[in-house]
Length: 228
Image (cartoon, rainbow, N blue to C red; front, top):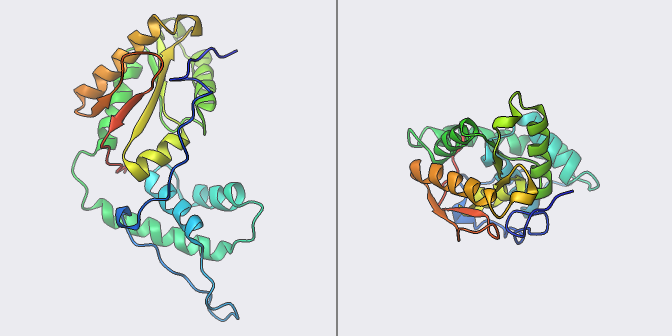
């Protein structure tokens, strides 16, 4: 049903995200130990801590969301200590709230929110954290398009998905998928949509790279992820 080209289609996925260097973390990860237990030296492994770290920093999830994602989705089949996970999440959330006090009045995430709001006003359904993959994001767009009160005014879509979110939180590079309502018009109207997205990003003062074709997604460079 989808006819998306490599730049914005289902077939292209970015390479796996490498673990974030310790010096780039916004706050130190605690080494928690169980009290009153024979396993006094047990602590959460580095990969699990990294998952907690970036999910907290993403800013989209509350405590219950984080517990569900970590314990029921990512590590559903593994033996992890939910009490340690819960305590670590509490610690990270508290540390993030302290860190927010040092953030600038307007962050890159605030700028991105304004960009997506402007795009929606221009007839582009713009979605943040839309599903886990480009296929998921496109399905979210189609759902919103079908439910739109004035679908005739919609000219296209723009979104980033959860894998894109992980990359920008860790490495400051945000990929944005885009396209027209009708996949058959990707080469013509798709470029119009891409130019509209680039225009709004540049208006907001964000650094954008794009080759001007439908074969490549837009890339927002040097993005500092600070979502309130």
